[in-house]
Image (cartoon, each protein chain N blue to C red):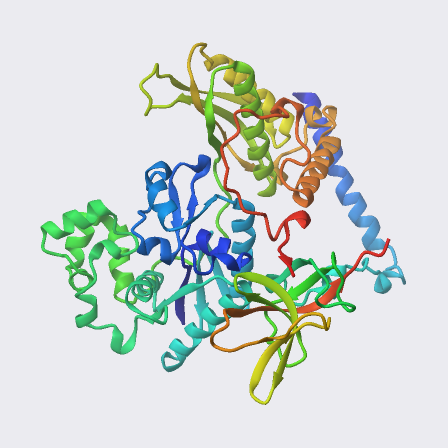
Length: 418
Length: 139
């Protein structure tokens, strides 16, 4: 059995190119929320020297000079393209573990001699079906697959690499820095270097008791994985989240309580719909607010938590609790940059025992109302139906000036062909 | 508190009663014939991960394909000569018929008013997907 790690190359930038072939030969960058920083760059943009995380306003000159295409984050598009990539991978292997929006582990059963062909086939199929370029790394463990993917990206033309057999050797592993190993953070890397362990080959041959003493059992598990002994569990589905956070920075600072209230209601509604999607109910609602710490102006940040009488996934309950919390922490005279909602004490909603209180509250009716709300918003786009308390104009909403069409999730925005 | 417990018991009593009624009864002769409603997705889409919808602008494929039609495009299929394809030509998506003749390929419009595009290495062209259905609203 083999693990393969499939990682999409420059995922957000690649998504922008799929339905817009005019971008094929243009450098593309994608900006973070509020168009603040560069969070994705295609290969051409990287070659121009635009750095990951660079503030947008600092790149404006290079962007103009090289006709770089700029996009705000289009999460509707990226989410749908991610689904397509994962579904395509599911046709290539018996088990797929989605690791992040643009990475998945596959469990595959091919002989070593055919591993390269298999990896190339996976890469070709994802490219043909979805238009997204990927790199494939394979190894006997997840940690080796992840390392193989790193090598595939940095050192091969083909974009695939099998870290096994002849390639699992001193001459290669000696050239890879320990910081590239999955699970070795920069702190451990610095510590290991002090003991003379700088490359992967040295780490593989380090003394077990030394590793356990300095990096605990978790570090030892990583070293075992590097030696080809699988220690990291297979997770079919990511566990339900213990907390759900919904928060954004404002496009421009907010001073009025009314606007904070609208934003809190809006993020409550988003968090509540996420909660229902994982079939959960929350027992507590936390609200946090903060000013912009990077501005030279009066600073304030605070948070408050309201514990609900009973677990709920009903949006009006969440909004009401959020407003109560907000009232308790709001101070006049500050320019707020951010408000966020966190739902905690999440339990599976089917585990809730019905009480008289739930019957009195028309539990069934409320449940059906939320179902209807979610299905309308799923079909017509988030925000098709919303609560009046979220506000209609949303003057505080984030800036997304360079948003591309939602090519694959909205009928009005599908690609046009001539 | 006491009231809550009674309510809980009442609710939980309902479920076993309901289950027993089902178990004791004869299976309905209609059970085998329970039909679901027809789902157009199932009919039109063979590879959901690879299927995209696009909208047509212009009349280059008239009369078969009209301005405003929605095309169902499957990227998992390999085009052959005669396939209607979506291609990216000079940075634009276009719908044309792929024609392979004597070892060379071209994109041909069904409408005679448009010139065929020969697919030579000099032409910036990538095949993007194969058109599998045409959706037209007629009212």
